[in-house]
Length: 317
Image (cartoon, rainbow, N blue to C red; front, side, top):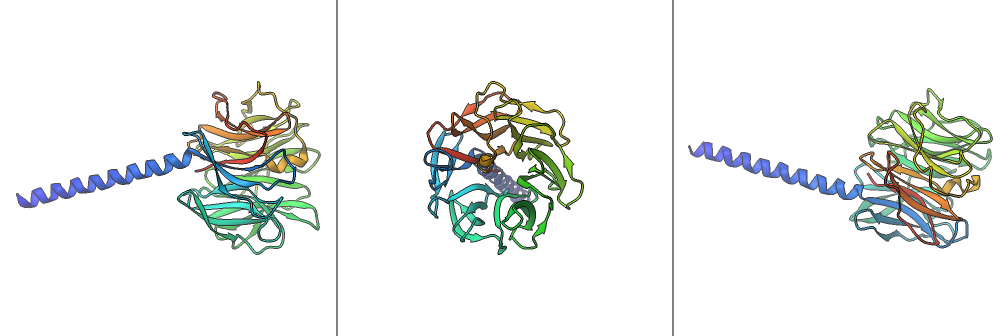
């Protein structure tokens, strides 16, 4: 009888522990999913101000400074986090030229910033793979004036070149199974969306018309892509599948400015971890603002209202 009571007590303790772990996980990931990181510089785009990294809470609708820009007129921008939220990567000029800085991200603060690689080219637009093993980013070569995509281990080692073509390759992101890279490429007059295997094989062009398609990102829940395009003379948010089919304009009623290629670096789209919403920035009367929208096109909400430049938003995992 005593042994039976002891076994029942152990089962109750085990259930309580499992319940605690479950509640902790829900709290951890629920809070993470409600946060959006982006960069802000005072005044309009390209006004020589210093961007810093901000964090926006979708529940409290509050914004605070996460990391102040270090080098004047350069600063930090385009921050993204790892799947578990423990690491953060961003573009920074603190290492004498544009490089990728990787840091610990704990208790809402950035610690121990280090240079990701020791390569000589400028580095931008990093994204962690969903399986947590690799990072994709683009390098700009000042000799050839080309921007190509590269894949590295999570520690910045074993760097491999993914693209070797004339033109500019930007905003790479991973498919949910970490097997494909989706990116924007300007191989002719216009930016278009492409996909390529993370092994460097099977390049596929997903968009093809006389307009720009850029700032691509992928859903972690479905085989869907979000991107910006100026197909109708204004910048709008679109979604499509990984085959380039079922394209839909999510913001047909939004009145925006047209796209300027020299401003391409400041735009970004990003999916929420559950795949239900997308955050993006768009130019309104010469000013970049952030918006959230449901992935079916409903619930459009502007989340920044100021005269500053709000750019490269990323929905934390």
